[in-house]
Each structure stands twice: as structure tokens, then as C-alpha cells.
Figure 1: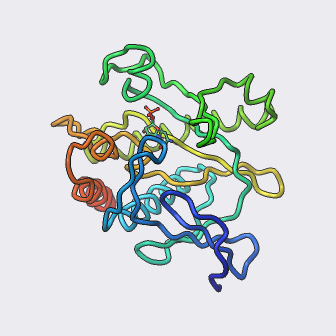
Figure 2 (figure 1 turned 90 degrees about the vertical axis):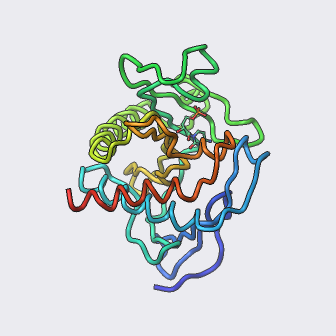
Length: 239
Ligand code: C5P
């Protein structure tokens, strides 16, 4: 398999074509961004940690029966994924109030939610990723009614699987963001990444933030924190 021309450069990764039409070569970058790109820094070691963490989690999710785009890790910063047409949606699931939910609804951070809640956002930097409901999604023809149902079901399955994983390593899964794509035959796959960039992870014992809020809120260096998450995940294999 050969790496070919650059297809897309995002804030945290570059996607390349390969000699196989349905396989994409992904390179994770060291760039950290927040506030829709208004805060931006190069952080040595970040790309490596996110690639390794997301590779591990997508493998676990595959084992748990959640169909996803991950094929294999190639190196510390690179992986192969299946090519899909992305839905322009960010799907957020929350178990505990934090971040924009706390701000928007005035609910104190750390307040458990009676049941997991799913939110949708339009993936559009120019519009600042507005929150939308299922009616907006269907009106704008971003998915069919069937597809959004499937996406919600898969999001809940990811939550169940990830909660189980993180519980074993003393981490509370507060919330996370997922993205989905569609294969040529219509099959929906979980795509993009799952890492401390896209989840809120709190240490069960200390309540410490083990995620990108460290960077967003200037709480310290993100690298040792992401390293801690990676090391705990590696220990999983021996549990
Ligand atoms: O900021 P907010 O509270 O809405 O974020 C909810 C979850 O979605 C957090 O885990 C955050 O890391 C993730 N998120 C993301 N990318 C975005 C917005 C939120 O990964 N563009």
C-alpha cells in the first residue's frame, strides 16, 4: 500500500489518498486548537498520543461490535482508515453536566444527568458549529430519519462500551463527541477520532481533568495528562 497525495488537512490531522481507493492514510499532528481555532499552539507529542489512544479505543469498540472506520495503526503518528462520506455533524453525548451544557443551561459542572443526553451540532466553522435538533437535520437533508436513528443507537453503544473501559482505569467519562460517515453501500461507520481531545475524562479519585480542558482552560501541560490516559489504557490489557 502506497501513501499518495494529500486529500484534506484539518486542525489535528492530515488525510492522504492511498493506492487503494477505499483506504485513507491519516497522520496525527501536534497542533492543539480551541475556541473554534482562535487559540492555537504546537504541542510536541500530542499527535502521537492521540493517534495511539484513538487506535486503541477504536479497536476496543470494534471488539464491542461498533462498526467503525479503523483499519490499523501504522506508526506512532499514523493509521489507516476506511474511506467514508462524512455526515457534517458532531454528535455529543453527555453523562454528566460540563462545558457548554453547564454554561447554556446553568447546571453546575459535575452534576450527573438522569440519563445520557445526545446533542447534535452542524460541523461548520464559519457558522461556529450551531446546535441543531433532529428536525433541523432532516430539513437540511443531512441524514435520513433512518440514518439519524442508527447514529443515535451507535452513540449509545459507544457510551456503554467506553464507560466500561474507563471505569476499569478509574476514569469518569463525562461527555464526548463523535462523527459518523457512510460507505458507498450506505453502511454507517463511526469515524474521526476518540481521544482526550474529544472526550471529557475526570480522574475518579481526584476529579482532575485528564482531557483537553487542561489546554482550553490553561490548567497546565496537556502532554503528561494525555500520557497518563494512554498508560492507564495500556494497563487495561493486563486487567
Ligand atoms: O464544549 P462542549 O461541552 O459542548 O463539549 C462536549 C464534548 O464534545 C467535550 O468532550 C468536547 O471535548 C467535545 N467536543 C469536540 N469538538 C468540538 C466540540 C466539542 O470534541 N468541536
